[in-house]
Amino acid sequence: MGGVLGSHAGPLGIAGALVEGGLLGTFTMFRGEAKSIVRDSGGGAVMLDGLFMPGVSKVAGGIASAIASKYANSNKNKLILGAISGAILGGVLAASGFVPLGAGLGSIICALSGGLGPFFGPRFSQFFRNLSQDCGKLLVRAADNLKIIKKNLPEKTVNSTGAFPACFLKEGIRTYIYSNGSLGAIIVSALTETIEQIHIFLTSKGSQNKSCIE
View 1: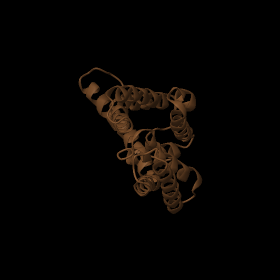
View 2: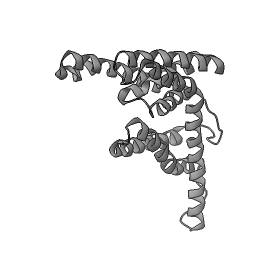
View 3: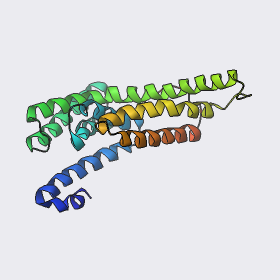
């Protein structure tokens, strides 16, 4: 798909679009993983190297971090595999001219994000999941004090109520980095993430107050 979209720009456009399409496709594959630790690791790593890497190359560290979270069996191995994968991917992108950075700098940035992503990403996401629960309790308590509601609400409803401010903030921060500050992207992404999280809260089974990274 990337190659087709870049075909209007000639051979160089096709080559660049093929790389972009491959990176985005690979990153999206990992973001669709069933285990949240893989999804969150990849998303968190992109936030780290997204501060320095331009355009689609932001996902390089995310791919490396997701690989580490999926295939490594210990924290030490996750750090090593993520760093090595990130260094290789970032170095290749920079050395090929796809990223306007030196190969050494590209390797260092992606090695750091790839290695740290498995530890930063899940904790970042879990913080905002817990914040959704806390915000929901505060909002329901305020509504109860104002006599807007007259009975205890189900746990799923409480958590869903708090999802809007918490998830909107979380995805707003993430998309600000992903999109280099595009207001339209921030609004669309934040709303989409909020709706998704509300759906998860409403359809999940069992207690939702158990904090768990994985």
